[in-house]
Length: 556
Image (tube, rainbow, N blue to C red; front, side, top):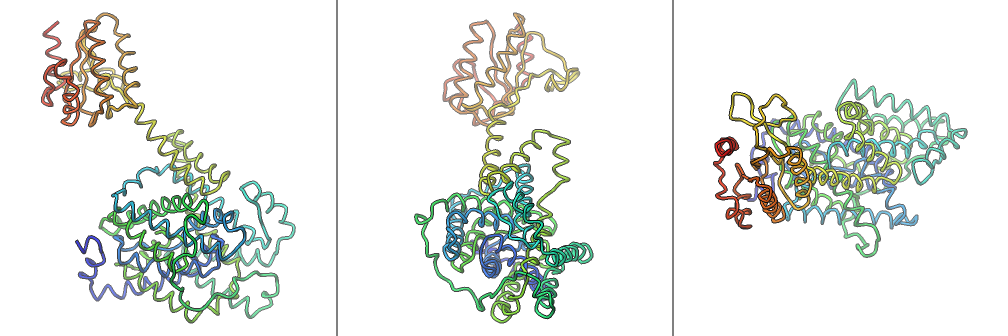
């Protein structure tokens, strides 16, 4: 029980000394990657830079104890940072302290949702947002994030409340572009991209941060209009409850819900990818608890919602992480930096942070996947575009929630209009398959074979009824028997059972008999409870479609 609740017990018991070096190097590397990235993401969230570092320091430490992924790295992510920043802007009214308090409260509410979902065994919620929706959502988020960072790259103020406003504002400000800042940022972007190709998994960003600080501090560039991050408080975060309560902030619940969904999906997806690569499996339910506790700790430490991002986790994995101990080493390294090295960061140009973000979000816009969707399934492509456009027009919070809604609508649509197959016999066999897909199948004269390829519930019974009767009417007067194959219907509710009863009675009035084949146990129980056996005769799992076909032919 202890090892299930605390997966760290298992890997600590099996820990080998030779693994220590790998985890130590990975932890240092992750910290070197995470510090500049978290500084950049904090600016996306509209918070002072140290709040991003707090997320890496605290979130990773607590995830290491409870998480089931051995390479997943926990910290702020670009999408969640922008989600927090754009949503809290209207809640904080320009008050920086209130902004930070709302961000911490969001992490705490997120934690409560995750832990409640863990207790209620709701890990299956990850399956309610399709990969197609995520492709569109991430693309929209990438464009939105890019537009918030481009003004920093051009050395202008920027502004605007939505996609169009930001583009127009940036275009109007381009004549005032700071050439020195722009060149500085472009060079940083080129170095980051080349560095990723030449030395994957290495903390190129920390090298750029160090070089930029040296250049701004020791050369005339410091007088060319570069904005810098300014003073970062020295020391570890103070731990206390967020000063605000849920009732004090209108809108924090939808924000926390969106952060929770996005974080859980992103974390489990990244965790599964790394687990498959390294030959183990993760527990999605335990990940709810790990993320919940990690975000609760971050909330107490003045941070904002964190998640397991694929890019930071890939750095951890490539650097050689074997166990979550690498996260502990990363947190220890970040703590040392907060205690002794924050003074060196005050001359860090914000254009460098913008460059880091712009490079990091490239993976969010998956143009190859969008082209693939367009090629193979126009409807799926349309769904992705809806998610993309929703993020651009209505913002990232609405985009997340609309993505979830679109997915649910697709599920409802699929469930409400299941495939109703009309079967024919494969020549020379006793097997029956869909006549539409296999027109060479033998049609049984006077017999209609129907297979409902889903459960039969109140919301799809009418559609199934319409499909069956449309086929019955087309059979004219030759039809004598309808055989319903329920092998592909695992469940049926009362409305579905009563639909079958009415179907039997309506067919009987036309001198057509109804037979049921291969009904599953739960379906048989429900049909018997509705007294259908008194009408149809014994309903048996062992009676096959072919048995009933042979019987129908004999009774002609």
